[in-house]
Length: 481
Image (spheres, rainbow, N blue to C red):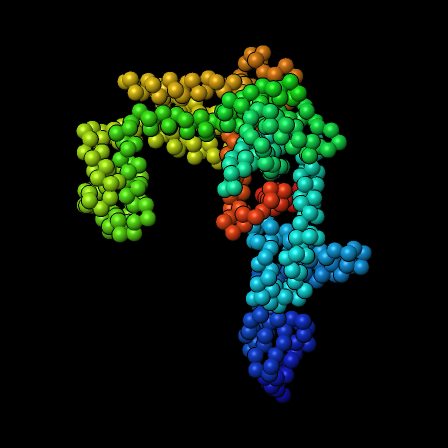
């Protein structure tokens, strides 16, 4: 006898019985996957099996299992601790993403979180009073556990924030022989003023935070800073306590100073660019004209703007009048061509040095290539710029030491008498991936400025410090510690 065809409802129910009502549901007309939240074709059993084996379905099941495990853990912990793991995780997530805690007062946002988490959402004051300090302490403990006995480099810089305060950030990173190290924001402090005394105290204070049981002086091998005189003096003073440490001033800053020398040598080019910037600042009609005439060019300071500026009326603004005057200067086009062909390597090299994961050998090669290019320059102006670069890097004694270490790591026979006496052979292997710029501390200031927006000026420095350290070190995983 031929097989009787199952009715639609019985067929749908058979799949629910086979795979479980936690996977499928039906209203008698469609088969609905609860895991993926989509309708599934059920006419052929193979279609249902195929859906169950899809990457999305498998991934969603694993995610649900993890969620259930996490929920059970949270329930267990609730009986043993007074604080909620969910609240802790929510606090860390908001701070890491730089989302103000007062967003939890937004009813739409609260309803969304409650609907998709099934949890009671805490208010801002609950997290502020009960969880921020715990998140901060946990983050600092993770940094300490990861650093432990690692050799490290340290970088310090200061800036003036929107409230006129001297703010210094301290970045540390591990020096590892076989791979690129990890980077952490260790400390943020307000200084009374910026000088070698305050920076030296901050240096020691920050390392005592890292190693509360006693600073491991021999584990500090490299100090990175800008070339400010008080920073140089600070490095010299600290060498008495940190005898293995090499102080290097930022090479990216050094190349920038060379670029400033180029700018000062060509005032005939600098002045029109400065005035052309003013022409388009907060002037939508002029921007529209520019984009109409040159749709493929970004806004100034691109050099190809002679025809566009000439179309603007001098009477509209003083900056237009001055720009036209400077653009009429003889030889300006020749100067632009000379600058482009001889000094573009400065900007590309600065960009390369700002790359996060770059070895010591590659960094020094970039500097050497720029040096070779500058030595090829002819004429009085070219020689002035070349001399400027030589003087800048001649003062960077620490960089000369790193060049020697790089040559040793490359197998060359080098006299190591100029290196710190306490620096032993094993220590040299940790410089293979050492940085030679302080760009990481500059990046931390960008995060600081993003945190201290116009509507968050009431932030105290101590609270900014906690928020910023949690945010900048959010990528630390428990498995790494």
